[in-house]
Length: 88
Image (cartoon, rainbow, N blue to C red; front, side, top):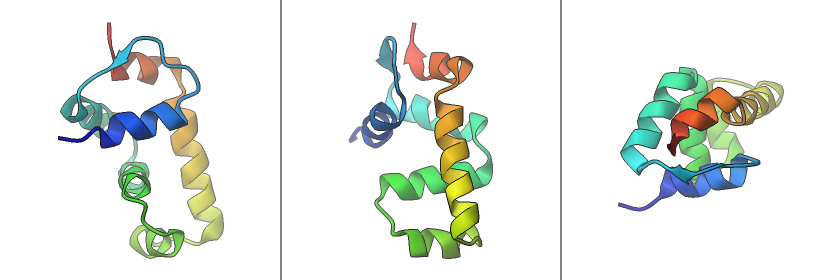
């Protein structure tokens, strides 16, 4: 299995202390901590889906998509979520 989540998280999280968990655990943490829209957005981001398709899938406009992006990245950079993504 490839490291889709790990690779993307390493780009989006400013400072990761420790080693990221395996893909299945990462997916579970993200599914639990992100809203449905944020989780769906993140999966599409990983799959390099175009923003136009994302907007259709998420039923939103440019402004809302930007807000979802920002909110998702902010959440991923919260200490309590970062702690759950790494093996201690």
